Image (cartoon, rainbow, N blue to C red):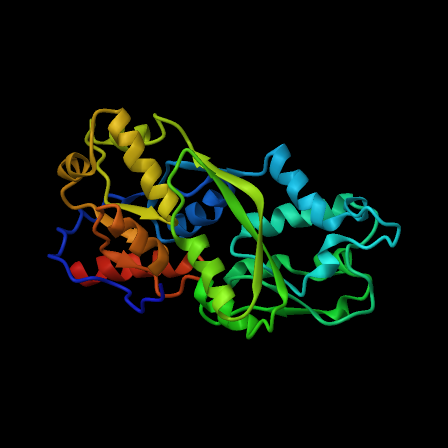
Length: 311
């Protein structure tokens, strides 16, 4: 992962908790990002419950795919030109993609872009763009001034397309996940389609894998219902996480309706409109949607607003 401005959906108010009880908030974010979200939840005085339902990480295959575009060894001639020189831009839709490129660049002895040539654009979403720092750019090109970094004001794939402008037949490299054990959400196919409609020639490279965390990944959420602790909210930050949770529930002999019955006051929060749309497509009604989805602060603040309005 389309641009919705909704921050909350009106539902019947949930009963307030006793003041001496912390609100418990589960989240299905991959471990790569879990620390940031957990910290924000703790700052609100809530009790975070980490329950990753997908795994996001590179594999030897995806690392080799990225290396191909950044290495002169990929070319059969002797001009020391990397395949990346045939592109005009890189469009990162995720933090994971930037990290894989960064690690590959750090291992390589030479920069993949020559110091002289047409301007080269690197685009990323929200806080992910913080990784496009001086170190990253200097390893990408000996003359970082050749690189133009764009960050769309709206942190969605659609915003990313708009920030790149008209392609005029130029090529853009798109680091995307290789989805395993899950149905690929329409986010990436739609992103590539929108780039083509703007006269870009998108070329995708599988930079990392997104795969299901396994049949027991929802166990922590389920187990909590067997005691008296309860669960007040669950936060989804991608459509894949939603599918991963539903798959695990089925393996554990449950479904979403049964889980909701165990937690009648459960508030469902989505990181942004893309995730919210994906969740509802899978049959999960979303109560709260972060409007500032360039970072996790947006969904956490929207959840706090929901609860403050109900008390």
